[in-house]
Length: 141
Image 1 (cartoon, helix red, strand yellow):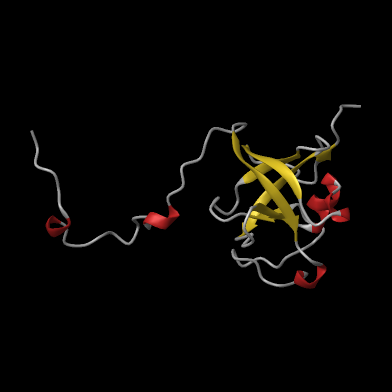
Image 2 (tube, helix red, strand yellow):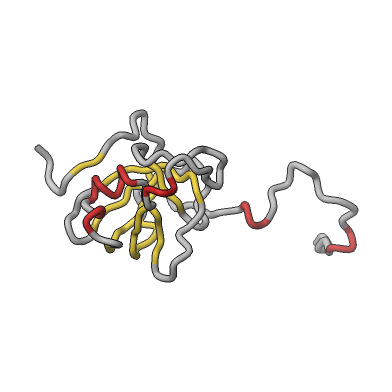
């Protein structure tokens, strides 16, 4: 049997080693990640830098999440209307208790959220979309 390694046994950590805060366990695509309230960015944020360095574009289908890695695609489903939208995570937030995701104006509009301050949603990870300008209502045409 081998002896466990303790912090005293480690001389240094490789620069390539991920910081503990960067490690995020993702469920398989299609598995529900979270349920909670979604909100959307006010227009005053247009053009400001997001946490990943991009400029916020209200017409892009993007969102802020506290822990999901940048570049993760999630399907956001309104639990009241069953409308869905796929967004790419490019920012951090929301920082309001009870909210799980902040959506761009375009994403919020696709869900019908722009007429309200927040709505109850479900978030699930999806594989990267070739065209992220997708939104759907509750039924197929």
